[in-house]
Every structure is written in C-alpha cells, then in structure tokens.
Image (tube, rainbow over all chains, first blue to last red; front, side):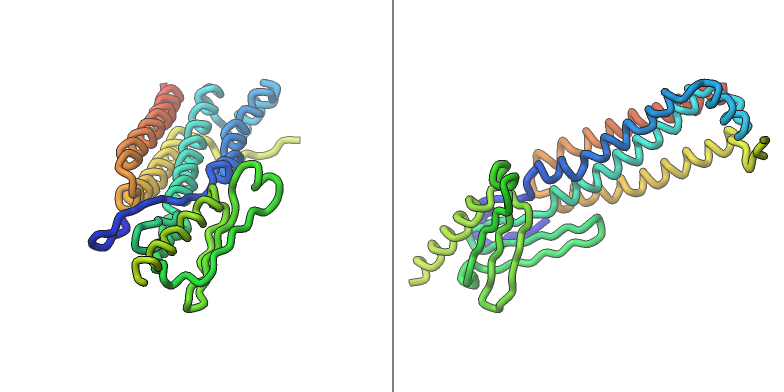
Length: 175
Length: 73
C-alpha cells in the first residue's frame, strides 16, 4: 500500500488501457483451447499412443485430467498478468504524483515527485489505433532532469491535464 | 516399426504430476493474493478479486481431482 502524507488525498489512479491488457492475455484463451485439437485425432491413433505409454485407463479421463491441470496453470498466469496490469499505475494526489512500477511479482518500484518539480509534460499518441482506442504515453520531466514515463496509459491527455491543473494550483498557492 | 516405450503413464506418476502442479499453483497463488492484499489500493477490488480467483481455481482443481479419481476407479 502506498502511504499518503498527512492531508494528502488520492485524486486519480491512472493505469494502462484495458485494451492493452486484453491483447496481452488473448493468447491465453488460444492456449486454453489448444488441447481441443486432440479431439480431432482419429481414435486408432490415440489408442496406439496410449499403448505406447502403457496407459490402461480411459482416454477421456486422462484428457480431462491433463486439460484441467493446463487450465490451472494458465489461470495462475492470467492472475500474474492481471497483477502486473493492476498494480502498475500512477497515483495523482493533491501533493504529488506517485509512480508505481510493478514488474512481475517480485519487482516493485515506487517513486514520487512534487508538482513544483515538474518542468515539462508531453503526451504522445502513436498512430490510428491509439487515437481511436484512447491510449498513449505521458512523459514528465522534472527539475533534476529525470524523466517519468507511463506507456500505454488510458486517456493520456486527460491525465496530463489533471497533472498540469494540480501543478498550476500548487504554483498559485505558493505565489 | 515398433518404438519401445520409454516410460509408463502410471497412476502414481500422474499423482506426482498432480501434486507438483498443486504445489506450484498454490505457491504462486499465495504470492498473487499477498500482492493484491498488500498493494491493491481500492477496497472493492481486494474484496472481490480473491473470491473470483480462488473459486475458479477450486473448480479447476476439483475437475483435476475428479478426473484423477475416475482414472483410478
């Protein structure tokens, strides 16, 4: 859990666009259905194969057994991808921007920067698909010349405007 | 041409495969659920997602056990 400072409230959670997550996980559906190809193999060939491995039980039980194990592994893999998608985000608060980078299960990087550190903000929407679906890259450059980049974020322009409006608010409060 | 069998697919071997799978899946599930609980910021998600995840996993595990039991019978 990200610990917020006293008087700090989370205003917005920015994540990657869900379409990118779906495209990443679409192959899992394909893999899940792949063992179904066995059902189209002639039964004589299956009997021969079962003789070869000296399996005496019924083929449907063996198929169901191996398929359910396969689905279990794919389901866990889906959960890993979901964890990566869900926990990889930017939290926009009234004090700062918190960049949380989740790479797999055991690598997590949390960095943050305050609005008065922001020097430059850029939005990149690469191509027709990104324009139609509404995802892109937001880049923020800080005073220490560090660049924070969020690739594939949903509604990048709205995110940038949100950050810049907070930046202006903080700037106005300080003057 | 006869190809000699290199191994026999016995119920004991399948049982070992089942145990190995359950161990791997169980270990990864604990890690995933820990991450959701520790870092999932929104309360609604942390309540719903583990239930859905574990329910599907239980169904698949039950299916594997059922198939294994029917092979033994």
